[in-house]
Amino acid sequence: MRHLMVGRSAAGEIVRRVCRAVWKIMREECIPKPDKKMWKEVANEFERRANFPHCLGAVDGKHIRVVKPEKSGSLYYNYKNYFSISLMAVADSNYRFVMLTLDRLEMMLSLLFSRIVRCGKA
Image (cartoon, rainbow, N blue to C red; front, side, top):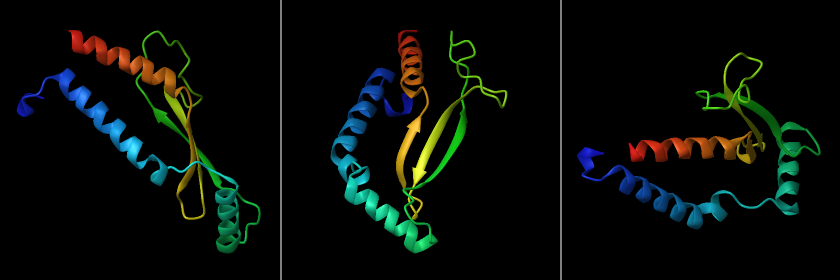
């Protein structure tokens, strides 16, 4: 951060504020809450494009490799023999995400944040 002449904590606060502002302004447009009308449109489009009636989305998952979090034991260890969190997603017939879930995301963010805080104090 030296080239910007901004300290780490100041840069972190700027990033947090910008992210919150973008989320507040763009969330409804980019990630609308699902409702009956939306699900009907998704199902109708799947039937029209793929001749697949009553389909609300295509589901897939992915293991996202992570560095083993401290004191996590085997919590993040998967059957593929590496540490990961799992991403599950549902996409509509136009390949747009309509639902996402990250396994243990809250715990992972908490561990990451505590590591960042420790780095900031060092």
